[in-house]
Image (cartoon, rainbow, N blue to C red; front, top):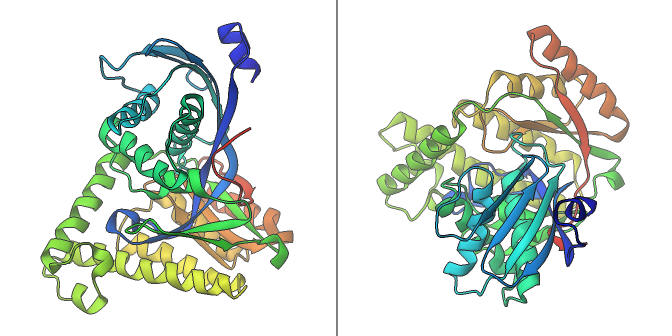
Length: 367
């Protein structure tokens, strides 16, 4: 990476990359011990790094246009928390983390619900593990990256984002059981089926996402306690219908039905019936809109526009309150669907959306 040479005056020891992710289906199920089905985006965060002999870390970010240095004697805030958090989590797990100089660049859109933070954590983690020759199997890495985000950066995310960024394979979606952390790589070759996944970045600013995300998680935990189950993954619809609190009832109904939609989607993909997952995607969006109440007008408009433009299914992806929509479309119809969404946005006076086609890519790797 030429930026490393510019910043530090030397070549790096190596270059590592980790992708953003889009969740095909399974929203807000991960922290409820449920099922998710993300795939890795071609957009990646790239970390060039070199080892240094002192327990100190210097990091330059192209996006922030800033260089910081830390040694964990004080808490790091801002974007640097995601880097320092990885160092902290590795040390907390007993690993001898090498000091390092790093330069970071990324084309994962920020604030779009495509998990730019997990891409950063996963790229830094992969680099430090390799630089230090650390004994950390790949299947154990997502939990450490998640701990960095939860306990150091203070963001209460589930395990899906880091799992996708680290463990995905090209041409596949990652079927993850968030309780056991078992994974199955599900073939998702949309091009072979004459299809494409169109991502629409709605450019909607995230509204209250941190506080509302935490509130949804707390309500799910309260519902699980009221039902006397370990997590909502263990609940049934008949159990949920008996919840006295109407908000708990709606939130739990989304989780229970969303888990089933993930399982149904996986079964269809195993059979190669890719087009038939469309209605499940659309039903997922309706559930997020009506029961989990995490959509905003821009994402609802994007879904409606995609469906009216001929998409087989469409849904918001990510934690909610803004971000991106994905739509399953015919491969030769991406421009038409994107134009229909853009027209719907113009009619509503929204900021023009930014569409792109996503092809499932690989997880974190050394380049």
